[in-house]
Structures are given as structure tokens and as C-alpha cells.
Image (cartoon, rainbow, N blue to C red):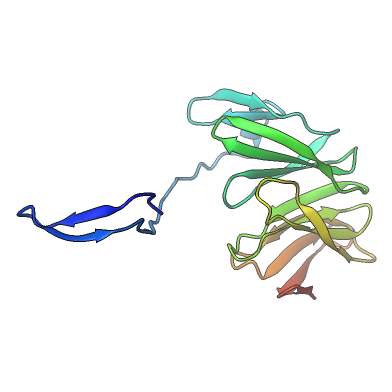
Length: 193
């Protein structure tokens, strides 16, 4: 949304229309970097690293033994699972170089996989806790505060390790390291099956 009026003028300079605070939609390709797994070892731990010019932007202090990281679709919220402390560190990106640690949420044994739902109409993230055999559903709709735990999905006789969410946001795929399988949870509104 443009915060001022736009004048539409013909090639001869004649004013044809004035549009007050117009809204435009654009597709933007931000590019994507594909790097080998061994390259990740070269990135400093607990740091925000600018891959385009190989420099550390800032350092983010997590809880004990950070293991996985997820960034919200709008790029403002960062969640980090911490294996030893059993928590999720929550950071808020104020602008390109200003990050704030909000707090830590969750509690359990060996949090592992973490992912945001990519559907713009669903403000949720999901965290697997391998030692507790559970998935936490986090409400992420408040853009300026930590997510709230809104649901716990128990997966008995399993070890939910890593997870990802389908592109349409309707399925959560979870690696069950105990049974050598992938568990699929279907999201239907506020319900999971």
C-alpha cells in the first residue's frame, strides 16, 4: 500500500485520474542459494551471516546446544530449538540488522525439528520433541511477541525427529527415527489427524 495519492497522466501530460493510497501486488524473486552440507560448518555458530559478502551481521544468544532454526514466511520471527535446555529461543527481526531476543518457550526432552506453516492464512509453527514423543503447535500471529503453545499432539511409540510442512500448509511430515518411517499429520482447520 502506497501511503500517498498517485496521479495518472497521459503521454501528452493530461491528468486522467488520481488514486488515493493505491495497493499493488508484485511477484519478487529474491533468489536462492544452494550450498553443500559441509559448507554449513564454515558458518559461525549463533551468528547471523550475510552469505553474499561473507560477513557476520550480528550474534544471537540462544539457550543450550541450538540444533534447528526456522524463519517465519515474512522473515521477522526466528525460532531456534535447543537440545540440552529443551526450549525454543525466540528472536524478532526489527529491520535488516536489528534483532531482539524475546524469550524462550517450550519445555521438554530433545526438541528437534521446527517449521513455520507456509500458508499466509495460517499463523502457526510446529516443533517436534523426540524424547517426549510430541509435536507442539505454536500460534505465531502476534508479530511482535513470542508464539503461544496452543496444542500438543502426542505421538505414542514414536520418536518425532525432524519435520517439514507441505507447500499448501495442510500436511506436516515428521521423521520417526524409532520406527524408520515418516508420519504424516493432516491439518483440517484447527484439527489435526
